[in-house]
Amino acid sequence: MKNIFVFLVLSSLIVSCKSATSGSKETASATNSQEADMTIYFKATGNEPFWGITLGKEQTIFTSLIPGKEKIIFSSVEPIKAMDANVKMYKLNNEQATATVTIQQVDCQDSMSGAISPYKVSIEIKNNSELESKKVEGCGKYITDYRLHDIWVLEELNGYKVFIADYQKELPRIEIHAQENTFMGFGGCNSISGTIFYEKDLLRFTKVISTLMACAPGNKEGEFTKALQSTTTYSIGDNRLTLSNPSGKLLVFRKVD
Image 1 (tube, rainbow, N blue to C red):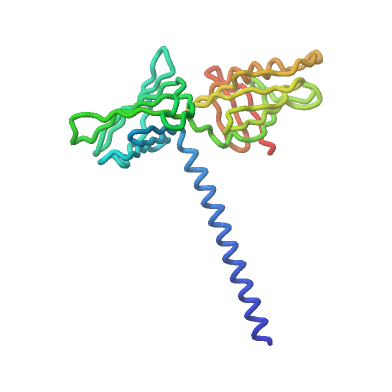
Image 2 (image 1 turned 135 degrees about the horizontal axis):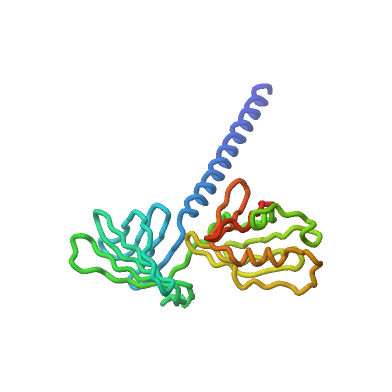
């Protein structure tokens, strides 16, 4: 009987260890997957022939059903930007192939699903042994940084620490929904909401609307919303979201969720 009891205890410990190890591996895998996804900032696909491309901080990967071009990995490069439109061109090359990727901000309809994407993509690609390039077209979108997806409470405005006395009952806050590219929150007097425009190294708060409650004298909601709409870049670190533009730092938020 004693031997059976010992066996059951040992079995229980082994199962617990396996479960803990499995859980740790799953958690680590999810974290690594999120970190890998964060490096990818643009994805596009096309049909006839089927192809896809991901632009990341380190690598640009082209995949397709085109013979000889099933998977080609390039080192990522900075784009050549058009002066008068939101058009970017990437010149890529490696020992195997060369490619020119053009991304244009214009509504693009998938030729099979009918889904609308905000960017049209064209790619001219050829192996170095070939004389002519293969041209493909499709649609794509930028992948908003998942770290933005949270609730953020204001700490600094235009370089100065903020206090509840500057607002009405509570500090301004924003809740960003990264997947939908929307936000909502409190401006210090009124409720606010709007959309975010995201590209690599670019973040803007657009189509901002608010309720029309009368604010007490001295309330700094107007300064807050003006700074929010002037944002063009951001950084995240130490549970803080910092919003800036070429003139300098505008807003600092603290993560609360």
